[in-house]
Length: 444
Image (cartoon, rainbow, N blue to C red; front, top):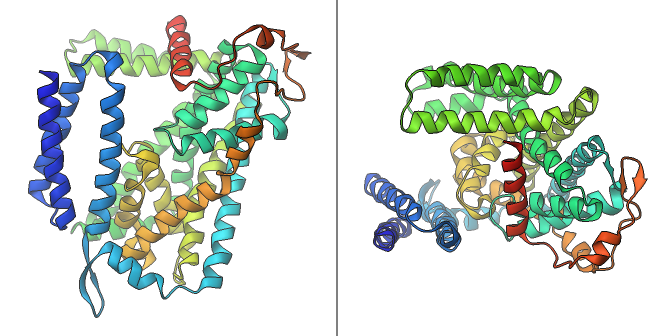
């Protein structure tokens, strides 16, 4: 049954790919995509858990390739040349870009991104310090971040960055429960930093919402959409900030969710209630481990805000790099925060295809056309990777005998004897995921 459903999903997806190649996406493609997604997820659920990893990897690669193909083969109107596929429009446009302008602003974009990476690493450093685990920032924490980003380029989701930084923090301190708690809280604070950036830039980037609603034929809905974005981003930021300052607040929310569940909730609603309680429970447990350290938590939130804000700003400089002289800072930065959020949840490798697609939907007017929006989005990714990809060099010097200059737990140096006595097989994403799952189970 599972194999049959997956086969149907594959055939439907091939139909989507054929339509994407022909540049004729429409209702037929949407129906085929819905069939492919539905049959895949049902078939996947019927497989043993241990056998889902392979199909998931194939699906992610397929969706990434199909998304890029659909985007680049999509025909757009080019002045004086009629309709051309996006990749042809990019090739026609790129010849007009001044090389010195390109190099100058591409380097600025890389520098801005690197500032964000440093800020994110510093937030992780503070969370470890809050758990009584301290390492040299530049020699250990920063380099592990660069290694994690390097590994993450070739792995799905955030397994590379999150998994590797967690692995090193636990390996050299032997305090796995503490570092997993720190990593759990980092995820909550990190996404809040992104929503905070969206909320701050919304008033200055309102024109992006007007552009999107106008293209949809409903410009009068711009205030409603802006209000919805503000409500969602604001409520998430408020919940997390109040939860960081006053952890009991999360207990109150959990009580409300449980009382709502006292009503008759069945099926999907009951599952949603369980997931909400699980997320809130994880947040409350991790925040509870930082009781009395509000200043440190606010500093972490500020660091994560800088991280996501600078990532959004990168796209402004990539727009300047490709010669969009009319680029406006705030609209592009605001639109890019939405694109970043969408990319985080896209089922593609490193957000490829989805990043460029959302950039074209949100910012084609701001950037002067679809080709420029796609090119700016792709260049933003390349600038970010170029700023950190050399983290691979640090990975090669992490020989089995490498140790940080110091590793303190509660102010005392770790003697590393446990590492010498244990079999060190290196970074294993599956083992890290299992350790995190076991820790979450122990919290319940």
